[in-house]
Image (cartoon, rainbow, N blue to C red):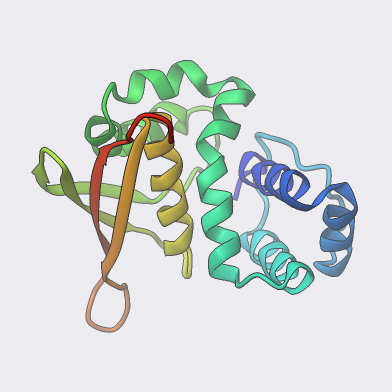
Length: 187
């Protein structure tokens, strides 16, 4: 995974538990150089080891950690110079989600050997959609759950997600049913 992802993980940990926990996590994960460079590619095993170390250090499940990272990723990417690209991805939540592959195509030139997941939207309704998530990486469906919550936050929406199909022996991808509504005032 690219350094941008690992930097977002670091930002998440430091924001939730502080720099000391981050230092403990990277030591526990045996990360040789925790100064991740945005455009540098790192083995997926580094990110998986860091997530496992976060879970061990904080007592949260890996699922909870991945959802938390996903939830902050869009805001983190926006703060790192990708705000205009995110704005151009879609003016509504369904439009944004439907254009995730296009967003990845836009950044592919910046990230050599980029291997992003793929997304497809079906069953689009005014307050719901089905998201199909295709990835060569195992175990990252919770990251997508968090990511969708983070995107919904950007659009001031309340979001309910059901993981209706899990990738495995009988399915080549994950599917999520997303139901969204405008947040009530004062929330």
